[in-house]
Image (cartoon, rainbow, N blue to C red; front, side):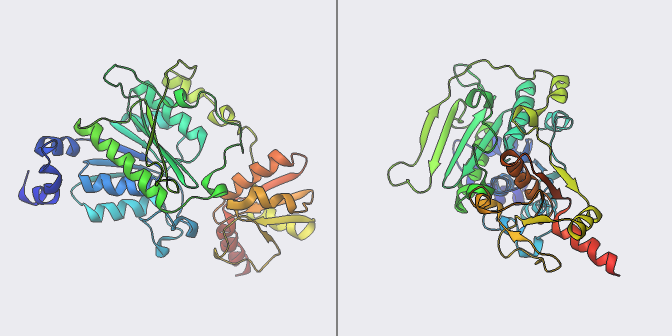
Length: 374
């Protein structure tokens, strides 16, 4: 190890449990972070700081204004850019001696196996059940340690799956949630909110678990859940709960993964129809429709070309009950992702209505609208 690298990592090399051997293990490790959002941002920062040699980043989202309250790798000038691109630039500038691999894709049952195969450890920073089950099943088949994280409102959880403990007991995500919850029974952060510091705490814990596993120091949280509540830390700080292992029926081969419908498994079998710019224009000019903007207040561009009502997705379930809807409803957001979630919520409640989402969101609509004028 040259002097420059030694100086960078000196403080952790000095630890008697660590040393240059553990640092070398970090250099040779490959960690995949799935989701470069609230959990992924702090995990990426501390993995890079520790000197993990290869870090993979999976995400297909674009940065939005509402992300900045908790996703601290990004700033206002990054809005509209891919999270993978910006996060890779930031952590590479912070530590140019490590290798960053970006995967700007939506993880699904056709690409997950081949992607995860190339890494040693996976950190789950996702926020939906279908993807969590997919990641778990692939990691279970490939026997890859999976570091689970979840946040909502003021509470977060961390665990390590697919890693045997000293008694050779090895649990997975399905041992914690054998059956997916019904859609809309468990709100997301978009619907229920989250305190901004919480993902920073939980994501950093996930990075710590990865470092412990790679260097073989300490006791990883395998077969346990560590739960932390920001509001109640005066009465308890960490609540460690054992997970009882039991067998589950789930895909056990790559082929079974590719043929398994995770959306259907998690009750998301109701697909949402997306409409293009020209279809939306025809609808709003020729039919009576209700147009709903599910962006947070203050997001730009502002809509002035047509009338709509603003119901942020973060409070959508509560407020939609007070809105009188027409037979046709068009939902839109910034780039067309949150509107799909909102449309699913509406379809579950008002299945008799014709509910669609504006593809590409208001950003794509504005672009095509301006092109049509000129």
